[in-house]
Image (cartoon, rainbow, N blue to C red):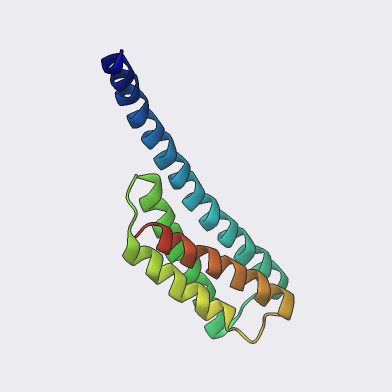
Length: 119
């Protein structure tokens, strides 16, 4: 009886772990996607120029690079750190209104939380 129980547990545990891992990958991609959507929305409203345009493009490129690594099953902490840094630079733009800044700050909080969850 005990051996059957252990056998059932042995079958279930890898399945649950794979499911949790899959949800974590999806969660990471959702955060990146939402952040990119927020930045695109802000860009459409403000049409970044000069240094702000460069910051926006670097943020989008680094988020895309991190998302690509996640879609390939690799959590590249360096790419995430780079994305966080570039999104932070966009958040500091003087072109953002307070509501937009709050939105980007929420995205940054979620990206940083994601980084902590994957320690």
